[in-house]
Image (cartoon, rainbow, N blue to C red; front, side):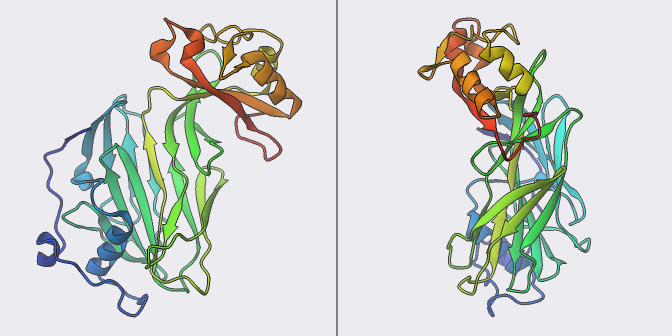
Length: 315
């Protein structure tokens, strides 16, 4: 992975420039925090190895899915942005109550101290071409439900990936939708590095994160949504009507192997038939580079999605 970026990050303090450790919340979570405290809490949870610098001016990463530009906002009411080489972008708004100014550490973490009640916010670009939005709950009075508004390209939507995260999908051309981005399953850590239970739900295009603190939780707690955009290959999802066609031996797109073809030990028609019987839809993991040589080999990771919980595209 090569980082193409000549912009230097703004620096917080001489201590951070020198790499000196900065004390975190000495009392377990003060109501008002300094930039140094905010950075210390976040970088203790994330480390610094995977952070890209210069994202406050737009960090350009060369990835296996092309050039990706990640931009962190100058203030808390701005937007994180991950833009693909075709100009399309997915943005995320931080859950700020006030428009706190950002301060950027030498490692590349931008913090927005005291941006919400008992809460600090932060943003990072990752060297893999993604963006992190970070919430630090400073004490037990901090809200444990956080809302992140997403800005999606026209025609894009979200599909649950079955592992706690979401694929960001667009039209595959002809039929189905293909994943071009991904929201990783969430994580949260307390001050001792212990995992704190956390999960996502969707409210329209708002990502809602629930963080389950308890009397045993050591504050501050840092929680993280992380997402990417611009993936060229990925999972292709089909809706219920398309799934029924495949189950009956029909073709919905020219590149799809014959439904009798076996993928992962099962025929595509068989997988689709199971999906129909269980009120689900079929999905495939596609490697486009293999399609001209071996369509059956190009379609791997076949399975189902949707079900009784419902899904935005499985309908």
